[in-house]
Image 1: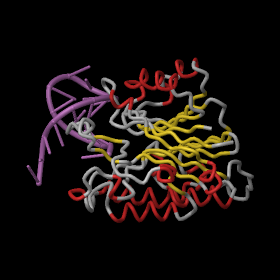
Image 2 (image 1 turned 30 degrees about the vertical axis):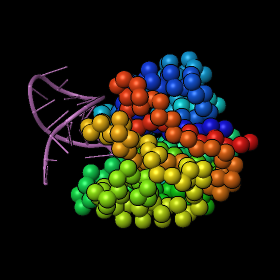
Image 3 (image 1 turned 135 degrees about the vertical axis):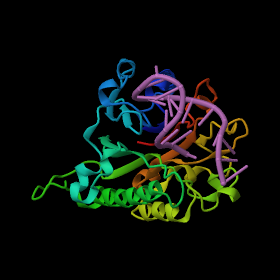
Length: 276
DNA sequence: ATGGCAGTAAAATACTGA
């Protein structure tokens, strides 16, 4: 079982790259972020012709997530509200950043965590609030096995979980090419890292760091500063696994090839492989 | 300290990203 994550920065602009990549890397599931398109306009045909099922939660211009899955997903839901209810979630589902479904007993949760703009900004507060609700969402999926519908008990599938996506957080300084100037700044601030740790303490582990402890491994490079050419990047796209899946993981690799293409996304795919 | 580049919506710039 291979599960990949890739922030494509517009699926319509990057469709050729995604189709080519899936032909070269026939993963079981590909989680996309920043699709930037409403569901009706999502370019699904070529992906379906490759033999994939397409599940989307999109909006105009911004955000948007999708799961491209070879077997059909079961128990698909989008947003936090489906699991937590409106009272807890408030307006957080207006931005389309969450989609989940189950294959082979594994719940895949595809996330596009808010960027947060700058520490101290309104968007930063939104990011922290979003991460707090994400923790509740994951806790509910891990433990309660119930839907948020009052009085209704629903047995949920897929208690083993693979969270993946664009977290917009570098967990450690070694995930940043040059951490010093970014100390305390967006994607590296203490409160963001603490919020991520609080989530991982529910029982998730970083698949990539099981296999590689080195710095210099990045998943995003800034368009503006020739970042990729100089490998001035950040590792902000992650897979987090529950213990049984973590044990079963046999590799987690960053594929830098798509970042070298013309007109690339600023992110590149990350793939986790799980043994049977 | 700011902008660099890129995508979207829309028709020129404004907004957002990270």
